[in-house]
Image 1 (cartoon, rainbow, N blue to C red):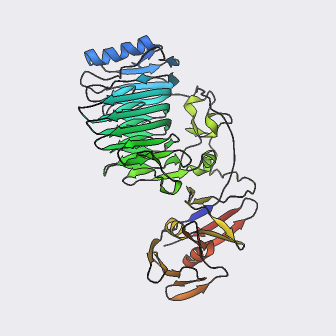
Image 2 (image 1 turned 45 degrees about the vertical axis):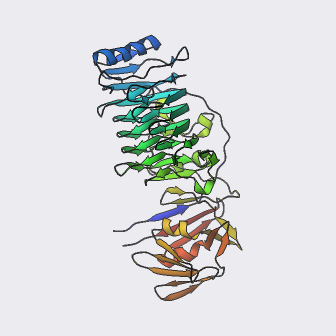
Length: 452
């Protein structure tokens, strides 16, 4: 079995503004779905669900403004909403929640069942601000406090805050706690959490035991009391699965009053998963979002959402006809070098440098990106790298590497730059018999390698 990886380095700049737009290419609502057109009908929906436990299917038929008063979260008689809520590409604005349900769950919805589907919904300028001093764990999110169902094709902006003086607290832009599925969604909400117990804040979810896929966050994340803070998730439990999730490395992350420096920012505060931090300018290029569907789900639109990805369901234009194997349009040469490995962007805490005419990359980061395990022996100042077919050693500040007992010499030595060891790109690439090309017009290095 052969695996081919290509590293492409891309740079682009845009400066755009935000607005919301709608779509006409949507599946129709379910046949028994009840239309909702204003606050009164949204109130009636909540009351039907809460009092009679007659949950069902609902859909929006236009935008709704909730600025005329605080909102009581939707839930069923047994706490969970159980049904479908289809936003149909419309937006609910100015949602304000200051009190959760009896389980301290708060958002547009308090809690959802594993049968629930929330889709095609935009929430703009939310203000979720929950303060409690006792009771169950606090879970606050713009769409739902505790999600057990499915959320897809949705976005939120505004502020989400949870504060507890006597219990644990979880806050996330989309959901406070997630046991279900969140996909193809994004948050630009500022997330804040504080607790004398356990507290975690994530740009998308505070505490995750479910699935998060193809989603991103650009909002700030702040833990005022507590420890776990992440651009995507505060805490990802053992059952949690996170794939192709991105967070804005330019956005603020703060813990207990201290701003977290760039090199210490994380996509996941505690736990593991597939998250990538990229800058605002990188988020304005579709090619950075590996394996995302920019044919029918996502798009970049000039003048919309600061040039960041938007969902097509909020655009009043049809999706384009898919084209086979689209290639990125590489921008003109610039001063910066950015790295894409196997069609996925890798952003290093120390950017690549051109030194003495050679492209230099952080040793550990590029080694791991090429599938190597990387260790360091401080006694001999030696980096030790391994793949299934190669054992590699390199003495820092030298121009040689030892590959399976054979020395290879290069015309530039490794160096320390901003606390990281930089090595010439060919040093590791050629150690695994990779081919290296350089595209001057776009300042793009292309590495192709294969293993059996």
